[in-house]
Each structure stands twice: as structure tokens, then as C-alpha cells.
Amino acid sequence: MRVDAGHTGPATAAELAAAIAPERLVADYAAALHRRTDRIHEDTAGRYLRHVEQWLAYTAARRIDPLAPGVADVENFASRATVADRRGRPARRRPSAEITRQRLTALSGFYDHLHGLGLVAANPARPLARPQPDPRAGEDVRRLTPAEVAAILAAARADGPAAHAVFRALADLGVRAVEIQRATCGNYRPGADGGPVLHTQGRHGVHTGRRLPATTVEAIDEALEWRRVVSPRTPMTGPRNPLFAVPKGHRHGPPGGLDAHRFATLFRRVLRNSGVARPEEITARAFRHAWVRHGIAVGWTVLDVQAELGHRHLSSTLRYLVGGAPDLHPLAVAIRPMAAFVAEAVVMLRAVCGGEDLPVSLATAERRRAAEQAHRELDILRELHAARVEAAAAQAEVERMRARLAAFGPNDLRPLKLVEQP
Image (cartoon, rainbow, N blue to C red):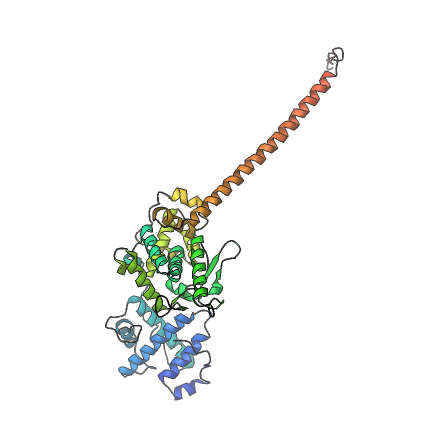
């Protein structure tokens, strides 16, 4: 659901109380969430509104007064009411701990808003404890090896430029699927100072500038060129257009924005054609876990990975290392000095031991290492030149002293008389 920016809410609490209706309550809460867009992202606000709508439908079906519910009613809805699927059809499975936490958070904010309007005496969701994220929730994520990621990237390249760019972002940067869907052409800056950058928008609207390896830049540029060729009249390459687009309708159709449904379809198709064992176990989150673990295995620290991911707290990064940090890769000693940042090191690891047929970053790193070696040799030559200048000056001073000594004759050198002290 989209927050309605045009709704300004009721004039007084009495006006809202005189015409209590679920639609009116949701609309007023939507307006309140819209005024908090500096702290709540639009997607998060949409989830809150969906949970509130489901709660009002739950109370209507059970004849519960939504302005005077009991704590037990809120708890039953949050932890026991079945979850509807994406098409709105009711599901039989019970809500997970994450859904329960989201429901309690949404209802707590909803009743705080009604309490501020004077419509409820207390917040029935506040006394309930919200389930905390499981610190070991990452153990069930499939751990991809560099060779498996390389095989998936090869299948994505065979699928087309659009698919290759999407999977490049997943594998090279370790971004979330939602960050790929939100990225616009204005977020992509290949000519930025310090190298190409992609600005991603993660959870809670946090923006992070991600430095791009040469392989990612090449894939994105190829996908943008594909869009210009396929749809020359409307290439969809403006600053506000989505950066990642896929063919609509069929694999050779015109480009369309990458939404959740198209991403899921593309993801399943590429994994099915990759030849990787048990592709049904691989999720988009597995690429993010693999990126973190491969970056640390190459020799980067957890703090380096945290800074590149844009995590505010170190605990968010440590969740990707459930079960212990990976062992240092034998090639880390050779790869780590050549990589300028974590993403580049991850690409190098796949190119070396994963069989990836894109050694562009390796060639770039080799040139960088050769340039650094040339600079070091130039510094040594400058030091040698300075030492030679000093030696030549000292030699000239010695020769001058010798010339002065040669000007004296044998009689000019008289013995010195010793003066006795009284």
C-alpha cells in the first residue's frame, strides 16, 4: 500500500470518533506515517498499514471493538493469525517470529497514534514482548563456494545482459534484492571521483555508496546499451528510471522495471540453468552471505566489510558469520595486496579459484601493483641520486683540502711551541 500524501487527517478527535470506520482509521494513520518519512521508509510504512488493515479485518470477523481490544486479542492476532500470501489469499501457516514482531510494531504505533488523538485509553500492544531476531538465523542459508557463484554468473551471462547485470550486483557487491529493485540510473555514477560508485538504499532508507569493480561496471554498461538498442525511442535511462530492467512478457521482450515478481522469475530461471546442485536451496540472501565470507577469507577484516556494507552496528555484520569466521584462503596472501576494496578482492577470488572467465579486475590489479613497484623503484633511484650528489660534494671538498695542503712547503710547517702554564 502507498501512503496517501494528500490526506491531512481529521480536524478534531471528536470528528474521528463520530464516524469511526476502519477505512478512516487506516487513512488517518497513513497520513501520520507520511509525516514521518524521514524516519520510516515508504516500504516499511506500507507493511505497517497492511498489518493494521489485517488487524481491523481480524477484529471485525471476531466482533472485537478495535478501540477497546484486550492484550490477549492483540497477542492472538500477532502470533497465531494465519499469514496471507502476496496475492491476498489466506495461507494456513502461522506467522513467523519476524511477522509477529512486525505486527506488534505496527499495532503499537497505530494505538500510540490513536492514544494521542484521545480515542483509546492505553496501548494494548505495548505490554507484549516483541520476538528478537534469532542470532543463529543465518545457519540455514546455503553457503556458496566461489566456483558455484562463478557457475551461476556464467548462466546469467548466457541468459542475457539484463540478467547478467542483476546477478553481477548480487555476487560482486553483496547487495540485497530490494536494493537492486530500488536502484535508479541516477544512483549509478561511473565517472565519480575515486572510481565508479553505486548508491544503494537499504533498510530504513539508509544510503550507502558502493565502489564498483570493473566487472560490475562492464555488466551494467552492457545492460544499459542493450536497453538503448532494444527500445531506442524509450530506452528508460533517465536519472529516475530503474537501473536494472529485464525483458517484459518473454525473454526477448522490451525492457521493464525490475519488481519482486520479475526478480523471482529471473532468479529461479538462472539458477535452474546454472547446473549448481540443489538450486532450490539458494536464495538471494545466500549471495550476500557468500560475499561477506569470501571477503573475510581473502584477508579483509570484519570492520572493512562492515564499512563497505554500510552497517551501523558491528553486530549486523557478525550475523553473517554464524558458525565462525571462514578460514583464510591460501591465495589471500597474493590477492589481498592487489585489491583496493573488498568487492574487488571477492571478484579476484572467483577469477582465480572459481574459474570465472572475466579476469579484468586481475589485470587492473596487476597494473596497479606494477605501478606501485615502479613508484618504489623511483623513490630508491631518487635516494641513490641524492646520495651520489652528497658523495660528489664530499669528494670535491676533499680535493680542495688536498690542494691547499699541497701549496704549503716543508719549511712552512714549523713545530708548535708549547707554553707552560704558570
